[in-house]
Length: 447
Image (cartoon, rainbow, N blue to C red; front, side, top):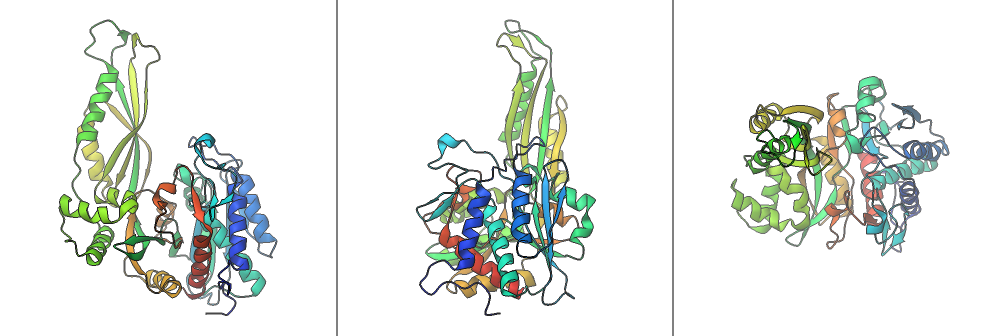
């Protein structure tokens, strides 16, 4: 590994490259890139232009593309030591979900440093990773070191609304920009947790698929005082009740099985595929179980309801939107169960559907990520896990690209990290950002 790769300062302070990652993270947080989920967004172009400026300043020539006005994606190809190898995609996204400012201890768009953390919406989802990548790229250019192979760097738009105007659009309209790549890293993995006193880093090797559906019930409109057996709201509520009452069977993928077996090995608890044993293992994970528990089975959550506009009027229609997360390659059987539970009275229309992702547990990229983590934290262990949510890996996987989540962060044991995602008081510790910058640079130099 080259001597110019990011190193921690001798006094334990952040190195210049780590400081730059922190500065860029704060700058990106201050750009309100809110994705409203209805094809609208604020600030994505401004953030993309800021990224372009940071890259062009040191001599790179990134490409800027818009799927719609102001919905910008930045792509850059970086030459590596061995350009004969397949390039590696390193991807992030610049959009974020909204935030209610009055609920936060500090302004969600402040990028303020408080209690050793950078605070603000996007601090972990995922402007921290964006900033680390940009700082490392700038260091490469200034110091003259190269990654082990060519990199395709992508900062996508629209991830928080499924990526149809970002990664999906690039895959559908400009796949040549990703040409030659067979592997990719992005969010959400590489963060640490503590299991029975042992620090463990969780690499994301899989993620659930998503199925967003709109249910529409039709009935007979009328006066609220009348007897009405054909009430659309009642039809809808009954269908939703059946959906929520259904107990989806356990479905442990190889990734989830490996994670729970690792927890069992660390704790001495039995690993068996029954609810009692699995719940005991999840309890040991503490707040991290927020990510792990939903990976045991399909989940269904009604999220949006719409019916009527006056208390004494029975509406003729009622609708709901439902968020379903399923295991890779099970979408057909899950949809069949949903249709049966909802029944023939309701209309079921897709809003958005995306595939699950399942990447090999044994893979050279996994070995490289593991090695980079353990060089920085040799007493730790590394385990795989499945993300219950979704990332732009779904889009890239449609090109046959093997995808992993790798945003390395060594976190304080008392930080409820999983609550940061779309939560109040989102923040990332400066030390964790420095750690991630070092590990990511090491990985890119050796992968």
